[in-house]
Image (cartoon, rainbow, N blue to C red; front, side):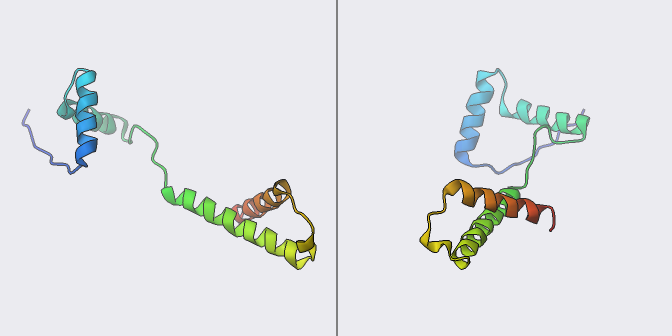
Length: 104
């Protein structure tokens, strides 16, 4: 079988850690990358979960907006002089987030 070379740019510290790991388990980086590529081709998928970091940012944004809306509602209702506990605010904020996710 003909061989080909693949060049990959990677952080120097990450490469060092990866090389050390590979040595610990009795292989080198080339063997590990070949195993990864073959696993991808065999399963026709990446063998680990890939998530969208934007989801976390979206959730944080939704929660921040919901908290802001909840607190503004409380102030507009004239409750700014009364103590509103954290549990109540978070409960109301979660309802807003759930509603936003449901497209309401």
